[in-house]
Image (tube, rainbow, N blue to C red; front, side, top):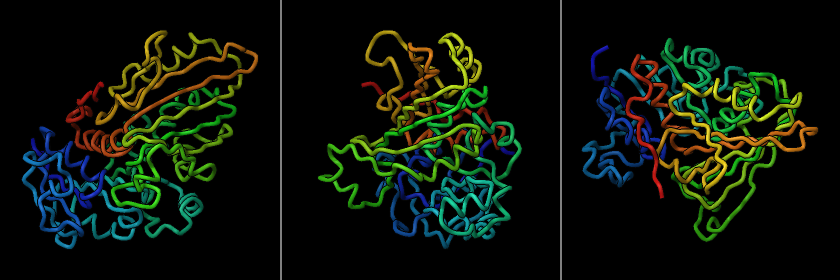
Length: 346
């Protein structure tokens, strides 16, 4: 592999495509070869991503003119990659797909959660789920990585240590999410007078990201999962009320979470006794690839109850950031390369 890898972003006009480009144009081991968009073809990238004015001189190409590259990063709407995967695989040796098309390994699970048969079942086992904290070794060996769901990722990272230890009996998890999760195309729910001031629970049961959580953490515990939209642009925060299989003390939780995340470059344990940032807060993670995780043991130990809170930027660690982290692993780079931005405060 040469020092600089040619990477193409296919479907780059949306929010995730913009985040991919923002990260890749500053990546020291990457040359962005092309960025495509059917709606923006022929226009400069800053027409869709004004933050990149003067940073990138690229112009959007039409997807029909997709050229060969070393890596193809897909940010197209759900369903498109799966229908075109045989064609797309001829364009690049490695692919990272940020859509939901190849997140699930089980075709039956895909049909259940997405309401249709998968159009490229033979490819499901070829893609590795692109969450490095759960799939690092496999990502180093694969040529194909899937994206991750932001709500699934924040929940998987919150609950992972407890699930791995066999401590989860029942979980009631609610994820609060910002408006950027809905994508760049406006809808009645994203119209400013409707969204402003909203605290809107829009998926009380049956959220598709549960399939990713089950795939990552197993089905050894009961899961109730819901999602609530709040007045926030970037960010996802999960509050998970966990009933454990036995009583635990706080020092045991510290050991579990430190063992799981003490060496992880992008997962931090946030649990302070004082201050306004005692627990994870999405606001300070905007633009960063970090996921912050905190927990609290219910003082009534007879309940075996622990509350876990985790936060991330849904467009970064919940999408483009994890994709670039996976790309780094696939190419043998330091996985933190190009992902050092720490977020903003205030």
